[in-house]
Image 1: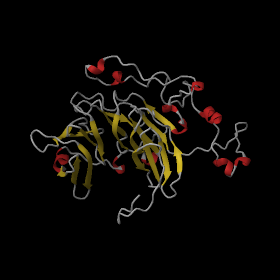
Image 2: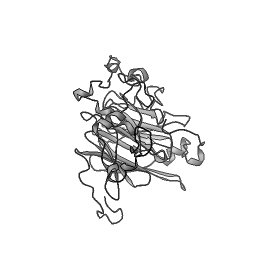
Image 3: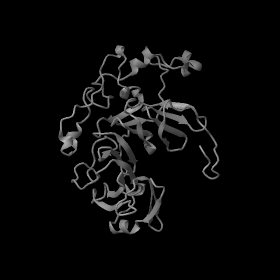
Image 4: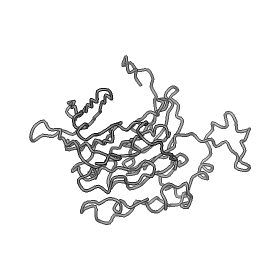
Length: 356
């Protein structure tokens, strides 16, 4: 970690993961660091002390490299996506297991150093949720994903072929083949399997819209409802964001505080879409190809935006693989579409349970 003003390093946390770190995110108060790894592990660290405070339910270590980590604002939730095509919503909370199993009262003898000792493997196994009828189980039937992707999205001809659903490994624990995607589920609130037909390589969270966007190697952009992880804009026609790209989607980014979504792919194509609650949701308002010549396109690897609420100026900054940065003023387009920012005072204070 570096000082943003001086550029000097101020703190270092070593031996964080057993594999490469693929993404990181800070919590709402910038006191915690959430880290995702190549093997699908997700851990939470205290910024000041550097100590690990929480280990979340991991993704598949074989094909579950973490591609996105996001923080759910005041809901205190952590959203993770991986190459295993799974989306998970975790609760950012450390559970206290110093309660005795007999009478439910706190064991005074377990105070101090004993509380800090990890539980045995046998005790942890008892706490795991394995009953497929348990209401806390977020994936429904253990042997089937929540929804076959083919039932919720109109796919191309190649995707119409019957695919074997990705089932949870129900092999006996004695054989040591327990599915890693469903371990340590104390903090797991909800999730979804098989959200894409190929790897999820990018995602973004918009708390002001209650939406999650994911992009994959299947050339698809999918938008999900944050509370239920159900498709939010799949009913749009083929010209919508779900079907516009013809190459791997490399970036999806919500433009806060507007109902806008930017998507890019490996061919250098960039789109800006209107999202709910705008009445023209799904409409593309900007289509731009990052081309230097008529024959050469360059993939976009990074982007950012700047909005000045006093002047209404909206700047789009785009960086590509060749090291070039382009700055574009798109304020006129937003005014033409009458796109207004969505601020807390402009939204109805709906009562909802983020842990549902």
